Image (cartoon, rainbow, N blue to C red; front, side, top):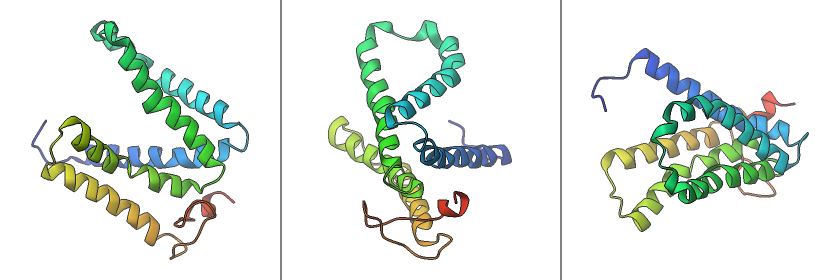
Length: 166
């Protein structure tokens, strides 16, 4: 890890990652109108496979194939099941709310790591989680409609995607 300050390219790549990550919830919202949740999850897995294939090819010889069972568990728990559940949720919850809820992932990862894997809290980990939650709060409280509204499925919802998706 480098101690150099972030360059303009670093900030641009971070911004690009945020746009791609956030846009996925808008795409899910549109896609579940066409595909059922299982089809949607499978399409996301197909696209992810195609995108990661060059990386897998580059590191194929370094993969310990004796560990195929844990790799399969990670594939299902980290990709297949969440992709399916996000597609199901996309039919019932605003895409912005799904994005905000997904932003809780680092918090739960830190909590599970501490509880089950003897991970220790460090200043940087806590700062990272707090910054992520602060970003989610900005999305909730400073949306384009200047307010928080209700939803039949969850009490807090952000409606900014409705400006993008009529």
